[in-house]
Length: 116
Length: 223
Ligand SMILES: [Zn+2]
Image (tube, rainbow over all chains, first blue to last red):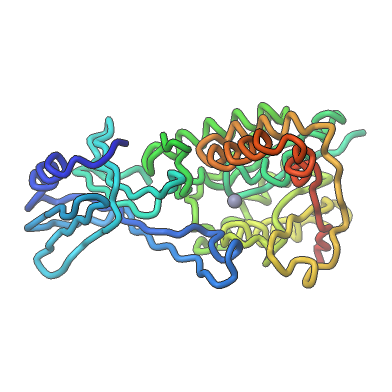
């Protein structure tokens, strides 16, 4: 992955407007957060291979970036995005990495299902 | 006759961090060792430093890292259960126990390594440990392996007592470090930190390396 180019990401997102796309969305602070810090909670959420269709898509900010997808009856959004890639399967991967290279947030969109 | 050892863990790297020394020692002693890895660690947060993995490339990368780490430890038999990272506790427990039972029946281990149920910290550790105990319980009592359990919670001593086995693995330290490095996506940041620490404080090398030279296990009584 490489540092987000907002213009590039915007056009990749725009190309998916009004089509069915598979979604992977996650955020986590690690399963050991509570072990390392008694006052912390381990928090994680992920959804994989849900199909969504959005009517508007927008990347905002100057890094880390925010992406919002406007659905006919709702929203998907992710903040803290730093890096992106279109992999060899044609999947658009957006991720937010911390200083140690650890993934803190991920938003991925693909016209084909992600691997199970 | 040597021991037949089966190490049952959910993630690539569980077999190495905190336990790789014991497994390498078994191999050195001529015991047969099998590593069972239930998931591919697909949801790992560490991506390497600088990061080279991403969510979608992670399963392939970690599969290769697992093979390389096991190779470093001298383990040649690696079995995968094909479950998804972070989901084991949501699976049907009977189904997971059944997968482990099949392996246990085939390999007839004299010793099983797994996490200590309830003291694995990661929900996958606890769920797979429970499934492992459930599988072992299906065996007649005289055929059950001894369970070497890893407890990693903060209150482990309070709750489980002192470890039953404190194992000196310094004779296989090199193998263990090689296995840790083989899990590059997961260990690169911490290994670099450790190497920098040693470089900055060469007089503290022994002290910095000491935690990796001792492993602690609790014998879990299957009743
Ligand atoms: Zn683990």
